[in-house]
Image (tube, rainbow, N blue to C red):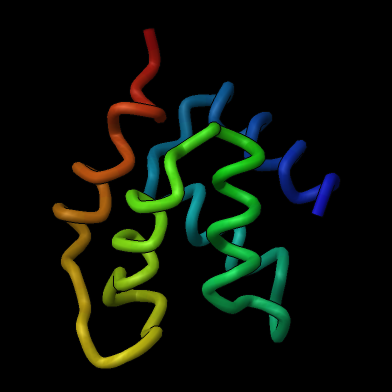
Amino acid sequence: MEILVGELKAAHADGKDAIELALLARDKLGAGFRAVPFIASFRLAFDIPLPVLQRAQAWERFGFGSVHISDEEFTSLLSPWLNHA
């Protein structure tokens, strides 16, 4: 998890957006990609509140559960913590 968190922080510093970061996490975790590792990695990397990440896990590209949110909602949810200053 520490390696992934470091990679997420580095990718964010390089200007990657929420979608690119989430896809990076999914690619790096491979078969181990589930809701809990997604939430844990983003919480550790960006200090995003748990309720926000619980909603974000419904992103349509993840395919978790039966309720899905769009790219736009996913990006909007995470943007307060990921927008570059």
